Amino acid sequence: MKRNAIIFLLILSLSMVNGYAISLCNAKDIEYKASDTSWDVDTVSDALNDLYENNSCKIGDGILEFLKQPLVFSYTGGSQQFVVPVSGTYKIELWGAQGGTTDDKHVGGKGAYVSGEIELKSNQKLYIYVGGTTEDQSGGYNGGGAGGAYVNYGYGLGGGGATDIRLVGEETGDFASLKSRIMVAAGGGGGALYSSSTGEAWGEVQAIGGGGGGLNGINGSYKFNVYDSRWSGIIRDDFGGFGGNQTSGGLGGRGYGTIPSSPDATFGIGSSQTGQGAAGGGGGYYGGGASIRNGFGGGGGSSYISGHNGCKAVLEDSTADEIKHSESSIHYTTMIFTNTRMVDGEGYEWTDVRGEKTGMPTFDGLSTMNGNASGGYAKITFINTH
Image (tube, rainbow, N blue to C red; front, side, top):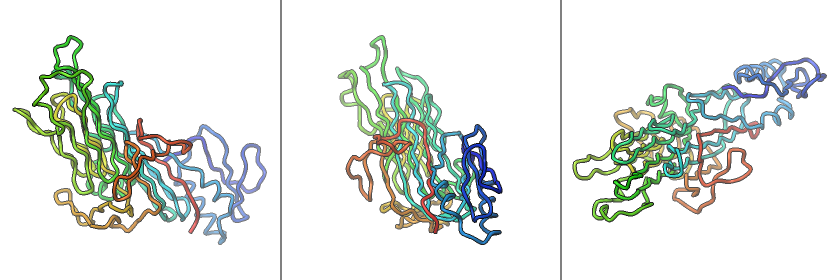
């Protein structure tokens, strides 16, 4: 993982031309200053360890204050790494991505937010997967299901990807990597629209993509912008995709007439429905289901935090063909978060149940928002040493 706008230089004195130095062990200092160059955290971690071990002293207060500057991870379309520079307590915050959105009539569900504090050891490596949003039928990176191309007066968009922290870094969808997740912020389901400018369609039905969930993802739904009585007796609430939960993926939209139900979502992956102009499900701990057709939203994925009351941890001996869950929330590695928060894509706080509408922090932490209406995001902040 690289962080822009900061470089570290090992120097032997406190004097410098630009920036300022931080005294470390009264022997060597670390200078940082504005630069267009990026730095690799492995280099910094090695430098800190060398200074600490070879000088047999404690890390100075200056470097600890510097480390408290948040490290941020935006969407890249691939996995990113964080190598822990010094043992201590860290706060991790994740935002899932919004489901596919193109305009005010194709609006996906917003991404969820999770946070917590965790003890990490120097040189420990975490893999960060930041979910992507989408503006077409393709599913957002990290678990978003695909939507359907235009057919019968409308098209659907893909679901938003989840943002998660893993202990094993492999290709997205690899089960060993997916079950190593210790924190997941769910993505929202995709948007879709049924309409025609010539009046041939039965009114106008707009999908409401399900928001990324807390313990349970939010179901995709719909609304009439223009009602047509011919829908009477046909339209059903279960045409939208269902939200994922702690032990299973969301159901796909239920079928009708000769049209079969959409596929159900799976562990980490929202389901896809590339026919009927449907909307894809959001990624998550378990993904959300795709809708049955245009005009109905995809379901949001579920979120997970090891140590958060109500979560159900996957067992270590689980396989892709047989996933087992504990009644405990704690991941099989026993890595556990404290002071946890979980907020769904509609802004509601979750304990072991859905509570009040509180909103979630904006990326910069200066305000609040009711769901993340963009690509995913992650932030890691050092708090203190052990």
